[in-house]
Length: 390
Picture 1: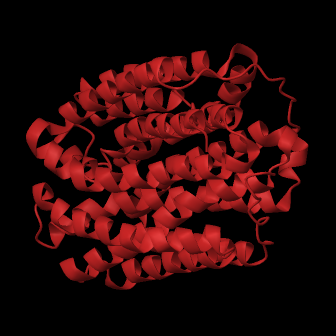
Picture 2: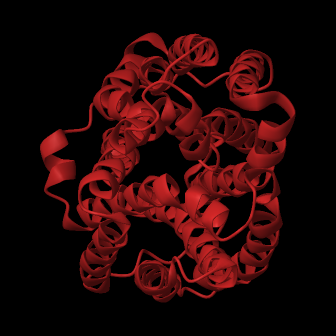
């Protein structure tokens, strides 16, 4: 990659990371913290607070992407980040769970994922686009892992309100990054991608289902995981003792897996293996999730391995098979399904835990993983990597 492409990839991945870190930081701690707030005895409402940002993202990803085509990528991204700052401030000042839900909805209204990935496509040549998309995808997995480690420690130091103020500050840092560090996008004509063409593409829709299922499982799990660790005898301020080794081990496994997938043309095999691992985790959570600290720690490590591999490979696969004239539309649909999964994971996970029982959340994850594995098994491998001179 050229220096400009490398700068674009790193800075756009940083914007994704700063924003997603703010969204993920509450996952390991909010379900426990909410018990001390009005409304915190309603598990379904707590789940809504965890996943509410995904609802507005699901509705606004495509409009934000379309607006970026008309008004430019950077102005739309800045507006989205300002909405995220406002939502973070509302949540930081909340005195009850209902107001936290409002703040999370406003956070999600800054639905800039499609605009950011479209800007990445504008700033990179075709032969290097896969690397940049994988860089952005990996940043999501990285900040999710970091949030699992950092959130309990930060919560002990600055409390839940402090976490939300921190997310506002991170969004402000992202605004400065987009304005002063990300290169200006070249003025290129943009064709309007047809929704029908994207929706009729079986390969793209299987990947879209996959990102929906992955993020639904992710947020649904964290309705229960913090309380599970507390029940196993680990105070919330010490949850990092489980998350940190799990994260480090997951990255040790993820890096060679990505190398095998990309450089040796084994994307489909690695992809399907990661989905199978997700299924094993969900089965394990159902069978052994309340059996003690060690089983839960092992299952979380395996989850991080699968999650990080899938977060790195899915955007890469999308960028390889989306029609050239409809990449923006394809990315908008992909990010919309991702956001819908984030919302439903919190809302549905909380409802199931409240009205059916914790085991139902894991059974839901099992069903999604099985369906995803069946769909992914029928996919054609992505096109082979092209030489740099192509």
